[in-house]
Length: 473
Image (cartoon, rainbow, N blue to C red; front, side, top):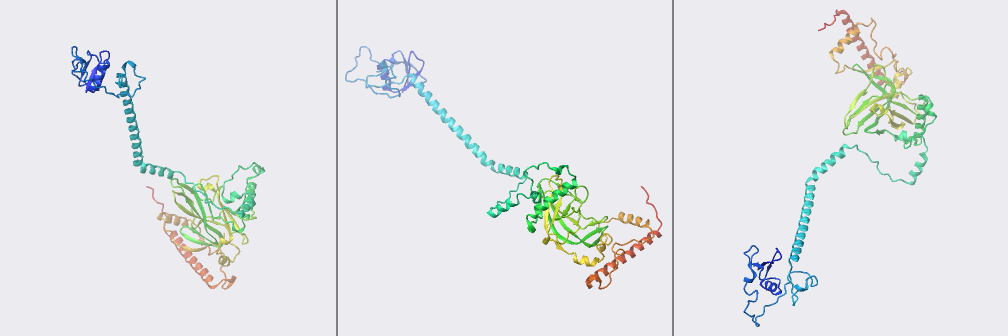
C-alpha cells in the first residue's frame, strides 16, 4: 500500500495499490518530485526513487512488457464531474482529495446519526424501565388521593317505563315534593307574598305544601331514611307506648302513651368529625305534624326527668353512629301518615333539614293497657308511677351528702313519691282490669310505701344529728 503527497497540496492521498500508483504516474498527476511512502507516517521519499514507476532515461520501455491499465473505481463521481484532463483513455478514474474528504464527511455524518439514534433509544428504554419500577408507588399515591376526596355516591340506574313517565308528569306540578323527598330545589324560588308574611304564616304555608306533596304518594309514601352532606339519619322502633323516664338513678314509666321513636345518626365521612346537638330546646327543635294538623308538635319533655335513651350533645368521629330517643304527643288514631322534621342545625347544617314520613301501619301500639291502667282521664302530668327504683351506679358520695342536706332543710311534711299520692287506687275488678294488671298496681303501691318509709327514716335521722359545716382548707 502506498501513500503520496503532491507538491501543490498538503493532503495525504492513499492508501493506493501498485497499479493505482502507476496509473497516477502515467497520467501525470504524480510527478517525480512528489513524495511517497508505504506508511502514512513515513518515511517519505521522492517518487522518482520508486523503481519502475517512471521510465528511466536511456532505457526505452520494452514493448513486450507494457504497464497494465486497471480501472480503479474509488469514487462514485460520474465522468461528467471529472475533468477531461484527468480521465484515462480506458475510463478508469482516480479519486481526488476533495472526493475523499467528502466521503469521510459523509461517513462521519452517518456515524453521528447512528449515535444519536442509539442515545435516544437508550433514553426511551430507561424511561420505560423507571416507570415500570415506580408503578407500585404511583398507584399507591393515586389511591391515597382518591380516598381523601369526598365520596360521591352515584344513584343506581333505573329503567323507566311508560307508567313511570306518566307518574312523573302527574306529580311534577305538586308543590313541595322535593322538600319531602329531601332533594334540593333545582330552580331558585321566586319572591312571593310569603316573604312579607309573619314567620308563623310562612311556616304553616310550607307545611301545607309538604303535606300536599306527601298525599300524592298515598299510604305508601314512607321515608325513614334521609341524608345530607356526610350525615345520615334513620328513624327506628316507632311505637305508641308509655314513655320510660329517669331521675337520679330511678326509673319511671308514664301511664299515658306517647309517640316514641329512636333516631340513629351516622357520620359517613372518613376524615371529618361531626357535632350533634339534641334538637329539643331552642329556636331549632324537632317537630311532627300530620294532615290537617293545626300546628306542629315539639318534643315532649317532663321537667326534671330524662327520657330513657336521650342524648344531649355528642361528637361523632369518622364512621361513628349514635342513637337518640324522642317522645311526642300521640297523633289521632285515624291519621295515615306522620311527618317528622329534624333541623339540620343539630348537625351544623343550616340549610338542609332531615324530613321523614312514617306510615301508620309501621307504628307499634302498646297504649291499650296503659289507657286502662290510668283510668283517670289522661292525668300524666300529675301521675308517674315508679317502675324500677334503684340507685345509679355513677352516683358519687358528694351527691348523697348534698341530697341529705337538702332533705334536712325541707318542711315537716312527708316527701311525696310520684305515683303514690297523686293517682287514686282503683277498685278490684273496676275499669275492666284483669288480675295481672291489678297485681302490677299492687306491687307498685307496695314499693312506693317502702320508699316513703325509707325517706321518712332518713329525714328523722338527719334531724337528730347535729349539723356542722365542713371545714375549709
